[in-house]
Length: 446
Image (cartoon, rainbow, N blue to C red; front, side, top):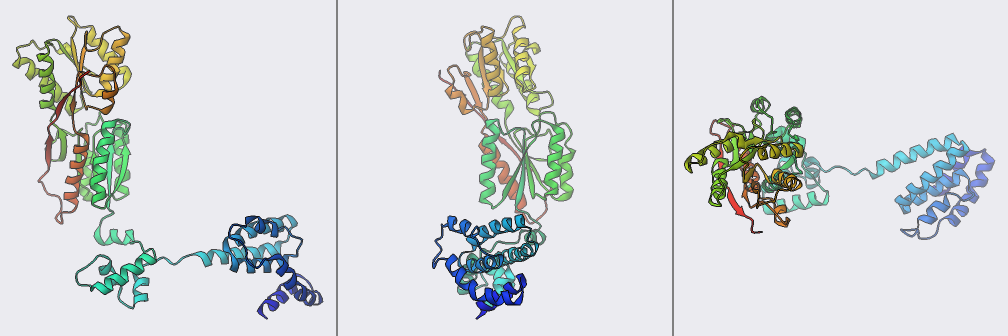
């Protein structure tokens, strides 16, 4: 009866009373011919074709209702095709009805978002009991825990992160700022950071400074605005002022530096022992008979550059070798700058027989340029570098040795320190972490 009544109403809207009586008698039979007993789940062709049949708008709308109950996905596809047809024919009233149907479909498909209150209402318990059950609180019985956790899983319950933030003052997100992820050293470091963060149920928000101090400051501001719980940083090469980092303390956002760290005492930092590693590399070259050793250093603003120069002086004095500062040059860590640094060293008289480069990338750029200058690598001019990247093992003529700086270990240790600070119920005090990691000279046997 309801079906015949619906046919009558729709037909009345579209025509006069007599035509409505006629249509209410013929529509059910026509629509029945349009719809098979069972619509196959994948029969998209039928859905599209049915919208093109020579039927009245009323018949099509009733057809839509029936199809909607049989297969909602097919109904949506059909309705889009039908609306296009009504638009082309200018049937505004039918388009209005279709818009109502679309809203009806949307509302009927919106799933209720599971909350503590909705779970509590279903189980007839309090929201606080649900919260404690989800967190395995010892005061909640095993049966209640299982009921709550099972229902939460069925309803795809997800904790309200905003509510957690206001309650715990945590977003469970940490920020990481690196000079450049293209460098394998920093890729390994971020792996160490992520492993520790994930183990502590924290997300990682990564930013690249590209050795630009201004961009570094912008990233810090963005991370502060995103309410990160803490920040791990390897400084941009030209950063001299650390105010944008120290200012985070007033927002209770702790900072841990690693690898490229500031020359400050009142900060948390993890770094490689540059002085001892440089001494070991230079002693290796001296034992090989080299006394004219050049150094391709980094920018003067970097703390490691000063430490490398100081270690060079100490080793030269210890071995009674004359200190020649013309053998200490710097690069801006670009290929062109490295080429210029190499040419500057080769112009010194007498020329160096070995070079200690700031990292493997700089060493590779210098070696490639030396080849173009017809210098025989590791014969006329020997190279030792830092970082010990895996790529060097695939080279026909790699540096003679490379200092392993343990990037993964530096990253994971920095993350561990940050987790320790964040999990400490008391605010960060003046007991800062200062972790020095020993390197290892790796000899390349090629």
